[in-house]
Length: 585
Image (tube, rainbow, N blue to C red):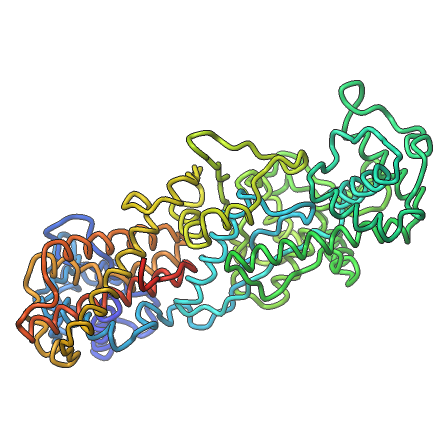
């Protein structure tokens, strides 16, 4: 409906341009929104206020000129001018009834649009370090990022989905060393496991595989391993201890054998991550390797561009980016004194690479604990001459899992966590995907596993899916009773949908395209979740108040069309959330 009103206003503006009232290059977008207060019509536009200065006439006077030139439309019952020049539209009953034909004709395409105009957008999400299985905390970023991507695609953007694989750096070294120490344990050489090592069962599984293939080659005595290694916590510093163990592992094993452990751990865990995400309905166009940035020279090139900008300096043998020039609290190291580049340098290179690939918009989905990192990356992009405004970082708060009212503790290194795989297999993909995006991404989320498994109206995904299944059951009953159904006859008698519940359902159905548009452009999938719950409630209320398979053929066909349209919209909305629309429950 908003698109229809925009079209009417566009035609009126075109006539004003031909009449010389407005310049042809005014550049103002046509805004149509639902008014905040009842009594101001169904939709309102502030177009006259935004164009008044360019027309050199008062806003209210311009609004009158726009209204005069609006084409006739059977969907608009009344147009009013309010306040300083707002144009308010009151829709006809026929406008809401027309939505039934629109939905039935469009089918799965109802709600989709060309708003994005094919503009290229990259969405990078999850990108968890491949140092262990994905846990339920990662699940929220996965569901959110995937749904944002699907929504953007639905409104006409060309979307590229990407996972940034952190296959280089300290965390991977900690993992490789943890696996090696477990291998030594399997060889009968017991060494106290480091506090900062990765202690999950999956580390044993990887170690067992490597031990089976390379036991003799991997064997080293504890005295060799612990030679000159500082004490672990509590007597020493656990981080210094693990770094020293990494150095010993590389020295004792040599580059080639150390790389065997490193690469095997990486490949096994990455394969698990990929499989878990695919089971969760998340598929990527590209798994981008951090290592490739070094191999391709992108990191060196990014640092050279920083040097050229004059925003780097050397101190203590390290190279620093003067991020304080851009409001950061302190400057940041991009190259250490030993010549190794930092994570930050790789991140600069990665975002430089994204923009070089021609994306008009780059969206990163990060955990909320990375909020301080956002201005740093944008500052670096600005320093190397890239357009930092193309980067949008969406921060996702943590998800806390509750079982039987008790909070479940999670820690990746200790291995005490619930994996995403376990959650999906317990509550199902549908419930997990829906629950994860029910709230704004910046809000903390309590994931109630018992509610997600329940079959009750309190479970929102069950409530929405049940509405779809109920409608399917009505059409099944229609066949069982050998009753005829004529879609065109129902459309010809759509004026028979006069009940209050029917009017409410029609109005909610008409809102679907604008909900999809808002959810996409504002990166707020929760808007779609709330809408589907509202639509399901409207349907369940209608179902409980009226019969559909009535004796009157005309009324029956009209009502079947209405609930058929409702079924289609529920299916369309659930599809954008990667949630199934079951025919029976």
